[in-house]
Length: 135
Image 1 (cartoon, helix red, strand yellow):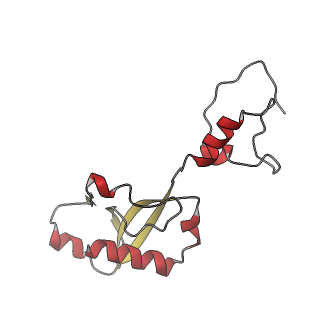
Image 2 (cartoon, one colour):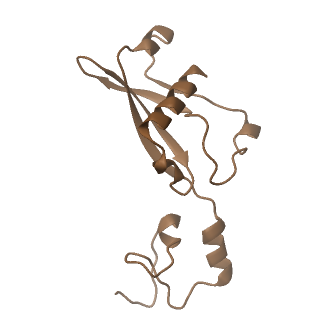
Image 3 (cartoon, one colour):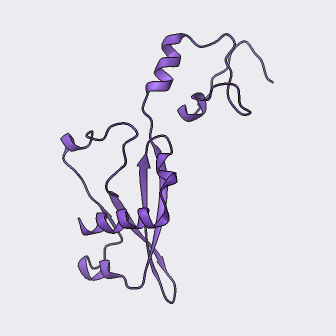
């Protein structure tokens, strides 16, 4: 345990959301004000994940010759239409990662709330990835 008269540091909100009763949780003495505790718990943060998809042919090279990355941009009004914790419907960016002798790879960073998306199976993520590319 460390103590001091002051400390300035940056900590991800997910770490601050710990209850304080598990190993690794941060405990404040004195406790944070109720207002700050509410702000931490209701901030609505997102978590970034990375998916890598394997394909037998690089179909994207025929569609966009010379391109190695793409992004789907929605109108500003549609960017905030997902409730906190709600399943994301589409991947919004893709980039060519590389090739092997037999396979071609596209990658994508994607966001979700409260780590819910980590429970999705590879098949579920693959379907979302393909659906997004079709869009």
